[in-house]
Amino acid sequence: MYNLLPLSLATIALWAPHALAVKYTISNNCGQPINLFANGINQGNLAVGEVTTREYANDWSGALYTDANGGDGLTGQRTTRAGFHNDGDYYYIVIDTERLNTGVRIEPLVPVVRCSASFIPPFMFSRVRQQNNDFCTSAMCDNKACSSVLRAPPEIFPAPSSSPPAPPIRACPGNDVGYK
Image 1: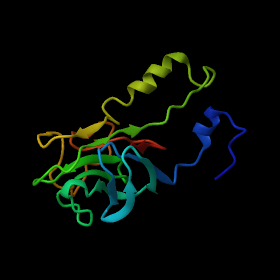
Image 2 (image 1 turned 60 degrees about the horizontal axis):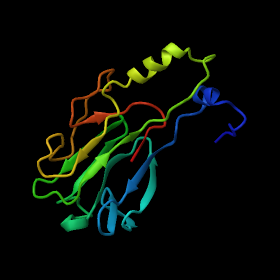
Image 3 (image 1 turned 90 degrees about the vertical axis):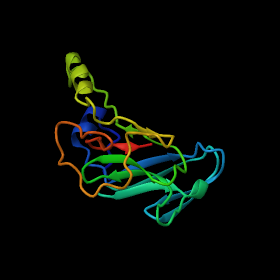
């Protein structure tokens, strides 16, 4: 990557290349250690309260989940999964029809670029914030009665649009978006 330290934040926002990976920050808020899985591959153990970060390619699609409380880490059966389809900036939660093994929350992390008024007039700041509308909203499920979830991973996704998709599929378009 280029050495951009001498440049201002506004210049970085305009000239920085697209991120090569999407960052996922995973926290274990359970009362016990858990094993973290990504698409059936064990990513290691997380102690109670531990936080880890993983980076996956911009076009990575898949699920992050745990085998805690009877979930199957290899197949994803009997798990609550945080699903991602980065090719279209989509994310969603899948709960197994048999059980909810743990609560899940997906919160997009959208970078905030601060610019001086010489680059963006003050009246434009509110417009920039309003452009997110219903994009980049949090998704959460911590009980079996969650209504804004899927029972199986989606096979198709809506075409990218200036309007957000209808939940339970959500989208957070943009550069350098991460998730926690």
